[in-house]
Amino acid sequence: MKNVKVIVEHAGKNLSAYIEEAPIMTVGNSIGEIESNMKEAIDLYLEDNPSPCDALKGEFELIFKPI
Image (tube, rainbow, N blue to C red; front, top):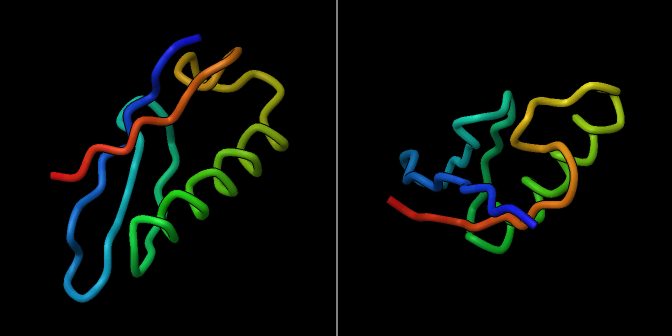
């Protein structure tokens, strides 16, 4: 299983998060909300893309990295 790094940044009064190797980003008010939103965004991306980017092919684990 590979690790997929999710970059979490402060964005004014909330947080934003993205995966550098994938066309996915989200926002939230807490790390918990970011984690939930990111998982939902990935699920929607995989649902709509029969050939996803390499970072999200196969089994992976999300690693949240605040900067």
